[in-house]
Amino acid sequence: VIFAHGGSNYLRGGEYVHRITREMVEAQKFLTATESDVFRGKVVFCLSCDSNGLARASLDSGAHAFVGFGDVPFNRYDANGNQITNHEFELHSQQLIARAINATIERFVTGRVTLAEAVAFLKLWICQDVVRFVDKFQKLKQRREIAALLLRVKGGVLYQGEPDVRFAK
Image (cartoon, rainbow, N blue to C red; front, side, top):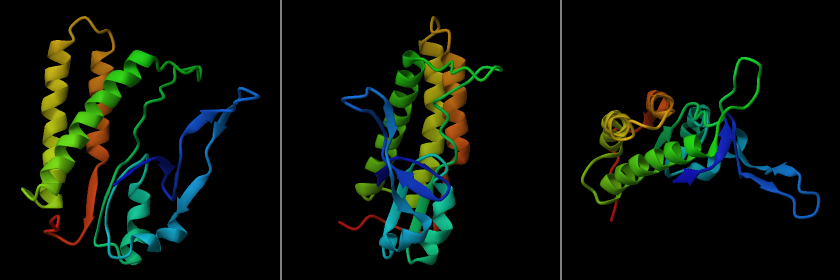
């Protein structure tokens, strides 16, 4: 299970503030598609922007299965290129994603479902949860944008690899 920043051919750590200069520093890449042999014999669940791009190299290197994601667009911009994402948007979005991922992984590791079934469950969970969220947070101005982000995340989730992969206890 990988939770990281990334792109279609790499994973990297998060940004951090340099203690002395106070500049925002982007962490280095810690894995690229050319190094995907580390997934040989593994089942990979990779929540990272555009991690679907790593699936083919990982499977070709011997991974049994790969669950990847498309874009996870927390950073939003207006027509002039100014960032419009705020803390409240990020917080609610991350909480909804975390709850969905937690429920999904829990179903898989307890052996109740195959990984493919867990991914289908994730997609259903997101649909149901965003409806509850929009209904519950009527006064939250950005609730529909948050729901749209989650539905976009759901649309980018892909399961690739061997069918019927189960968690071994």
